[in-house]
Length: 178
Image 1 (tube, rainbow, N blue to C red):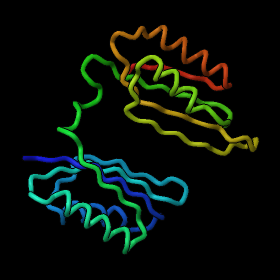
Image 2: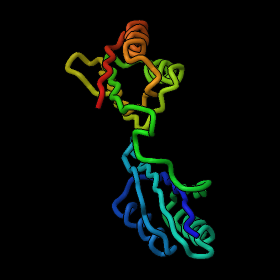
Image 3: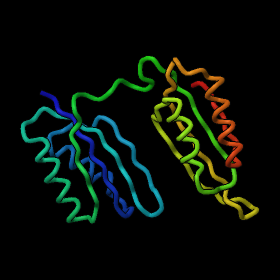
C-alpha cells in the first residue's frame, strides 16, 4: 500500500542542500512527488511531498533525516499524511483567485489580509511576500496569494472586504480570477 510523507527542512543555505534532500528521498526508496523550496534570509527552506510502497519507509526517512541533521546541521521534520493527498488546486467547488497587496512595509499586512480570507472561508493555496528597498528608503511590501474561493462566496463581497482591510492598513489590494 502506498504511503505519503511530508518532509520539511530548514538550514543555513549552501550548495548541495537540494541534492542531499533528493538523495534522502531516493535512498529511502521513495518518490519525490511535489516540492517547494526557497531562500529566506540566509536560510534555505524546503517542503517535500514523497510517497512509496516499501515496508519501513517512514523509518528510512526518519533515519536519513537524522543523518542530515547531524552531518549538515539541517533541521528536518518527517510527517506521515493521513490517506492520500487532496485534489489539485483549485479544489472542487472553488475557483482560483490571485490576491495581491502592495504598500509601505508595516506590521500586520499578512495577518489582516489572511484574516479577511479566513473569515470568508477562503483557503490559501500559496502565499509569497517580500519587502523591497525603494529609492526613498521606505521599504515596499508585496504580498501575493493564490486562493481557493468557495463558489458560494460572492466575489463582490470578498473584494469589498479586502479593499476595506487594505484601506485600514494603508495598502492597495486586488482580487483577480485565475
